[in-house]
Amino acid sequence: MPTHPVDIDMNEQEKYLQELLTKQAQGQLKPKDRYAIKPQDMPAQDAVKRRHAMSEVALGYTETQARLEAMRCLQCANAPCVEGCPVRIRIRDFIGEITKGQYDRALEIIKENSLLPAVCGRVCPQEVQCQERCTVGKKFKDVNMSVSIGRLERYAADLAHGGGQTPAVAPPTGKKVAVIGSGPGGIVVAADTRRAGHEVTLFEAFHKPGGVMVYGIPEFRLPKAIVQEEIDVLKKMGVKIVCNFIVGRTRTIEQLMKEDGFEAVYVGVGAGLPKFMGIEGEHLVGVYSANEYLTRANLMKAYEFGKGADTPIAVSKKVAVLGGGNVAMDAARMAVRLGAEKVYLVYRRSETEMPARIEEVRHAKEEGVIFCTLQNPKRILGNDAGQVVGMECLRYELGEPDESGRRRPVAIGGSEFVMNVDTVIVAIGNGANPLIQQTTPGLEFNQWGNIVVDENCRTSMKGVYAGGDIVLGTATVILAMGQGRIAAQAINTDLAK
Ligand SMILES: Cc1cc2nc3c(=O)[nH]c(=O)nc-3n(C[C@H](O)[C@H](O)[C@H](O)COP(=O)(O)OP(=O)(O)OC[C@H]3O[C@@H](n4cnc5c(N)ncnc54)[C@H](O)[C@@H]3O)c2cc1C
Ligand code: SF4
Image (cartoon, rainbow, N blue to C red):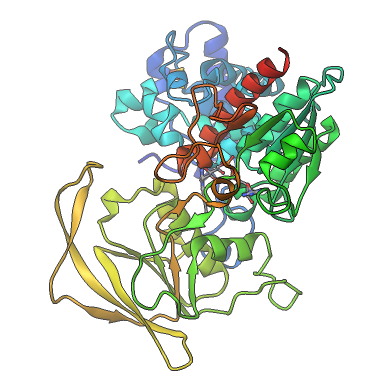
């Protein structure tokens, strides 16, 4: 692996950059010079100190680092990276602007296709999207050597911090649009339909807008101020935001359309229903879904012990987090910050099969999370007061690949052992909340409770559109945004008829 670039004398780095820029200006910068530039590591908070800090772990590139990283881009004629981006950002072009120091222009290019670059630069799984296709990574046969597209996107977005322009809004059309759910998909739909001049109301069940970006993804990965800035832009555009409003309870979709005058409704309610293991002891005090645990910690500020958090979490000593995805990593790293002495990540396959991003796994390990792979709970043990006192587990080995292509975990008979824990956080996935299905006759759902849509995000009900996790199952911020853009286009087209 390359040496950490911030270890290099900053003046040396600057000198190196100037040499490269001079060569580039003279038309003498060859691909071999670009390949020779070391990938720039992201400066991060100290691993020990950050165990007690909620603030963001990754600190972002310096200007010199950003330009050096951008110089690694070959400016490929066919730009295969763009094909890997779900919203087709003109990656080559925005990186080219960064090499020139034209950061505003870089951001303009990104914003043509992505409304939330500061968010996506931080949380998109670039290593399986744009960066997986990058020619530089391919040359070294290592995705870690690809140009760090996400970090460059973040750099351009962060420079404009708070200074982004409020998009222009067309003259009023007199048409009303309801957006249900304020996650990334809902935010995009609200912005794009408001831009077209419609009167837009965004309904959110929680007391704060932002969806999973606010209640799920922790502050140490995605500062909430960034999401709030985007919400503020919506408000400046004239989008009405109504919180504590549960569609299906406060009003139904039918009432919104027939009685309240909304001609188009976008359903972006996400996938907020946690899955459990279905094992003995899951009812005990001290067992949480990752959703509940993270929502209490993020949205209800449960980490502010003694400062009036509405729903504090009991302090845990020994925590087991069940699962191997990003949500499990978030929950484990949150448990570390909430003061647990030991945090075990229990996963029934090996680390190779873990779906979590490599960076999240690395950060979790650096912060002291103990990885217990090829293990899975059989039952959770409680005391007479109904509190968790331990977890009986089985050891596993890997068998033949299953339909997902990952090797199947097989329990080893008689391998039971007890793990001494007082808290268990179940992070094995989420499903669709059935509320909209139960209260919206005529809306088609599939067997998993997800809304069925066509390629334009139109549902089986006229005037009703849907996207994001409620359609895709659990997906990603960028995919939800992509669907939001498609749905908004369909709404604008249909309302113009
Ligand atoms: C802990 C965690 C970590 C994640 N990490 C990443 C990551 O690193 N990168 C990534 O790309 N993706 C990540 N994801 C997934 C990503 O956040 C989601 O795919 C994405 O947010 C889905 O967007 P959405 O538009 O469907 O709405 P969501 O973000 O799911 O928001 C839906 C909103 O609708 C509201 N709502 C629900 N029902 C109603 C109702 N009946 N009436 C009114 N409002 C309602 C909810 O309160 C919520 O605010 C993570 C998810 C979780 C849970
Ligand atoms: S594939 Fe990689 S090197 Fe080529 S244009 Fe995209 S980011 Fe640059």
